[in-house]
Structure formats: C-alpha cells, structure tokens
Length: 457
Image (cartoon, rainbow, N blue to C red):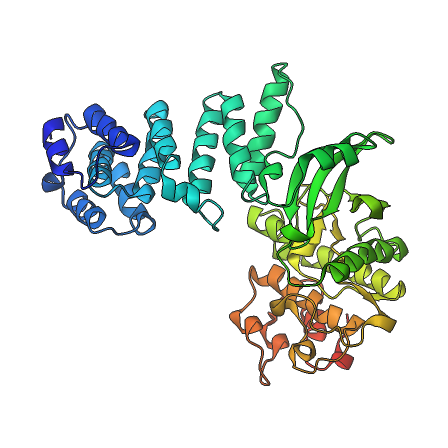
C-alpha cells in the first residue's frame, strides 16, 4: 500500500480540519508497506464496517485480532482513511489510543486534541460518557505515562470538571500530583476543576473552609444535593471528608431548598447519636457554612470495591456481620437509615479485609418521624412494602431487607433483574444460593422475607 493510494481513498467529505490533518499524518507515517484491505479478508471487513459507520465498540475484537496477527499498521491506516472520509470522533479516539500505546504518543495526543477542538464535542461535554471526557482521560493517561505530569494534570482536571466521580481521572490526578511533588513542584490544592461546576463558588469555598480550619484538597464525589471533598484538618493534623451542601441552583433535585437543608443537617444530628465502629464518624458540623466533616474512608464504597476485586463472595460473613452491627446501632439510636445500598457503604482502606462504615444518612429518620416517608431510598434495594402506592413508614425491618439485597449482590456479583421490578409474586429469598459459608444461606433468606415481621438476621 502506498501513502498516495490511502490519501486518494480517504476522499474527505468535509473541508480540511485539525482532525483531517492529523489523519493525514497517520497515513503519511504508516501507509508505506502496510497491508491493504484487499490483501487481507479481516482487514477488508474492518474497512467496510468503518466506512458504513459501525461503532468502534463493535469492532474492538476485530482490531485486537488484527493487532495480534501483525496487521496493526494496516488497521491504523484504514482507520485514518475512514476518519478522513467521515470525521468520526469515535474512530479518532480509537486511533489515538492505539498510537499512544508505544507507537507514536505525540501523534496520538495531537489526534485526540483535535477531537477536543470540535465544536460538537465541546457542546456535549456534560453528557454522560461524553467524547470530551473520554478524550481528556485518554490524553491524561498517555501524558502521565510519558512523564508529562503537569500537562496530564490539566486533562484530568477537565474530566473532573464534568464528573467528579470518575475513578480513572481521580487516580490519574493523584498520581500526577504525587509525581510533581516528588520533583519539588508545588501543586496548588484546589477543587481540581470543581469550580467550573455550576453553583460552586471557589472563592467562597477557600475563604469559608481552607482559610480557617480545613485545607480543601480534592473532590471525592458529588450527589444530588452535596459534594464531598478530601480535606486536611489543621487543628488535629488528619485528613477528613468534607460534605458540603450545594447551592440551590446546582442541585439536581426538585425538593424545596428548606427540605433539602433540613435533611442535610439532620444527617449530622443522626450520626451524632449513633455509636458503632461500623458507621462513619461525625467529626464536625457548621450549619452556617453548609458543611459537615466526617471520617475519611480511603477505599471508596462497596460497589467500587466489588469492581476492583477488593471484596467478593468470600467476604460475605465478615461484611454481613459488620453491616448487621451498624444497623443495630442505628436502630438503638432510634433511627432508620432508609437508603442502605453498596454506594452508601464505605470501605476504610483500599485493600482486602478492610472494615466497612455505613454512611450517607441524608434520608435517615427517627422512628417517631418515619411515618409517611417510606418511599425514600433506591428502588432495587427497597423493601417490597415500601414500593406500594400507600407505603407504610420505613422501619428497621425495611433496612434489614435492603441489607439483605446488598449482601445478595455481594454473594452473586450482581443483583438479579427481578429486584428492579417487584410484583406480588416476587420472592427475593428464592435467589439466595444454597451453599453460602457460615450459615449465611438461612440468614440471608431471613433478611429477604416478603413479610417485614419475618425478617431476621
């Protein structure tokens, strides 16, 4: 294959652009000596699919096989030709990723940056799974690997300005920061792009927290009503988690501001009454500055730990016992959690065997106030009686069902789809395996009984 042949086949349908020019660079660099689609059947199929606009997600196995068989050079040129033809950002990112994998990092970075320069990519940057996020993440990873931590940091910040929960960007940001600090480069601990999020006032945040007791360092996550940061407590010399209520304009909830604020600080009130090593500890509360300080759990939540392989079915007895102790302490404090789920169960350290801590008491209520508030929580973990139109009050028994659903997910790896669509014939206990360790089969079935009064540990 010659470069002139590949360029001729490209026949761009759009005027030259940075994306088109980067594709031309790929063709010029790799076309000579590359296998043509006419010379290899799979490469021909790959080229045809690209020209028909088949998503790259459906072609990954073909690309992997071509690479394995030694035809990556031809695949790269074929992708570049398709990119010239249609200007598809999806193809550009896949091509850029391959180039950055020890082939030509600089060219791969230029290609992905050309994607970021597209107006349509920038306009849809806040959409879930956006090309903007993917491109910045890819470039950040490549630059960090290449030793350019400073530039990589900016790309990770761009991702975090859109999604503060992105695990790869959080990990990359931390690695880049540590790399710079090891070289004696001071890194300003700000909100890492969170000031770009609507409703967050960076100046107010610095003056209200960092200028006083807490030095805000990095975001850990964002919910409908609040954002959580890691911070350093100067008074006692320890890292903490700061949970700060968002301004009303930034909240993704239809609930009235007074209700949201009351619930937010009711969480602190509830936590102050609960005594358990398996419940996240309340350390400080400042209603006037709209934040509370909590124990920092560095292992993320149970869902993330499941994905990372830090917990599995063998941990069921240990985690089950700890969750039971946590909910008994909540009940003893006269409260109902109402939102027990993997995302609200924190892991204290990112290692196997770490203890858990039940957190996020934003929906928790006292027994005396629980009437009429049964519909709180997340559907797939919600007790069957709370899914009805005229749901009764939430109770410790409904928390037990939610705990059972969490532990079943731990045992199976994921919850059955039936938990998303409960009807009169739903038998949650029927999904419990017969061979769980340490008598947890009958225990888990006891937690998942349909009748609240039948649920037991």
